[in-house]
Length: 547
Image (cartoon, rainbow, N blue to C red; front, side, top):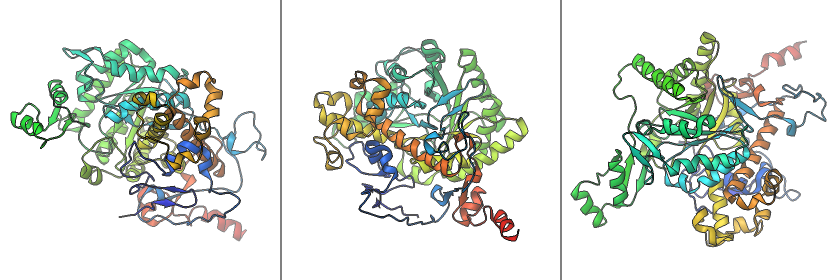
C-alpha cells in the first residue's frame, strides 16, 4: 500500500490524520484546526502555490515518482517553445503570453451549453447533515465563483417539512432553500444548480416539482451510483422519532425502528443510531438492452417535462457499466456524464466497502477516454465528461482534464470544495458568536494556525478584497465566511492551473491534450496508455541530434 507523506515542509502544511492520494486526510473533520494544503489554501489562496519563508530559504523538489498506478504517477509535460490557444486580440509575444492570460473557462452540454469560469464542479451534496448545515457557504461560494454545484439525492425524502402525497411533492422547504441559495448570487451565465435524483426522489416527484417551480434554471441529474460505495446513499440519525418518520417515508432504516426489541435497545443505549439507506436501481432488469430501454424512457420523460439539460452520474462499477454510461448518455444527447472512481469521499458509507470495492479513479478515467474515443468515432460525437474521485489540487485538475481530453470538460471535487466551507464557518463562529447557530462554528477561539494571519476576515482571507470588488462592500456582510474561503481556494486552484497550462504552452484550457502528460512508471504507462517520460518526443530529439 502506498503511504503518502503527512507533512510538507516547503509549504508548511500538515495532515491531522492519514493522508489519501488527494492530499486530504482520509477522515476530514468539520472542526479541524488545520492545516492540510487545501485547508490552508482556503485562507491564503495563491500564496500556497509557492514555498514559504521567501528570502530565508531555498527549496528543492524531492522529485519522487510515485509507486504504482495513480494520478501522482502522471507527470505534466512542459515545452520550451510555442503558444497555442492564445486569445483573439493578444499577440504571441512574451509580454502577452503570460499565465494570467490563460483562459480556463469551460462549457459543457449537448444542445444547450452551460459555462463555468473554472473547470470545476462540486460532488453531490445531498441528505447528509453536514451538507445541509454548510449549504449556504457551498452554494454561495459556487455561485460567486461561477461553477456548478450539485444538490444530491434524498434532500426531499428526509425533509420533515416536505409535503408528499400520492407520489407528488407540494412543498419542500429544504429543496427550495438549496436552489434559492445558489440562485441568489448566480449571475445567469456562469455555473449551474444541478438536482440529482435516485429511486426515492423519482417516486417522490422531485423532477416534476423542480420543473414546475424553477423551469430551466435547474439541471436534472439521474444517478446510477458513486465511487464511494456500491449501494444507495446513507445517513445516520440518532433520534427514534426521526428514524420512524424515515421508515414511514418508505426508506430502509437499519436497525428497523418499528421493532419493539430495537426500541427497547435504543431506550437503554445499546442502539444509539439508525442508518437510513436508499434503494438500488434497475433491480427488476437483467440485461443491457432492458437497462437501455428503461434509461431512454426515463430521459425522454424528463425532456417532455421541460428539462432542457439532463445529466448522469455513474460510479466505479466496472467496464460494462462504464461503456453503458458513455454509450447511452451519448445516444440520449445528455449534457454531462460524471464518472466517479473509487478513492473519492462521502458523508457516510460503510468504511470497508469504501476501501475495497470498485475501480480506482485513474483506471476508470483512462478507460473512459478509451470508450469515449470509440463512441465518438462511431457516432461523430460523445457526451461531455466530468471526472471525479479523490481529486483536490490544481495539478489533479490538469491531469484529469488531460487524461480525458478532449472529452473531459470539468473536474468534480467533493471534500476538497467542502473544506473551505467548514473552515470559514468556524472562523465566523468565533468572530461573530451571536451567529454561531447560523454558521455552525465549531471553535471557541481562533487557533494559532488562523490567528497568525490576523483577527479580522479582511486579514485572514487573501481573497476578501477580490470578492468585495465583485459584489461591493455593502453586500459582503451577507456573505458567509465559508463562501469567502471557497472563493479564496478557487482562486488558488485557478492560478495554479493557469501556471501549469502556460508551462505546457496552452493558453486556453480547451487546448489541453493527452500529449501534455507522461507516465512516471511503466505500470502507469501500461494502464493509461500515456507514454513513459523518456520516450515522449524521443524520436523528435533524435532527429535533432542526427540532422
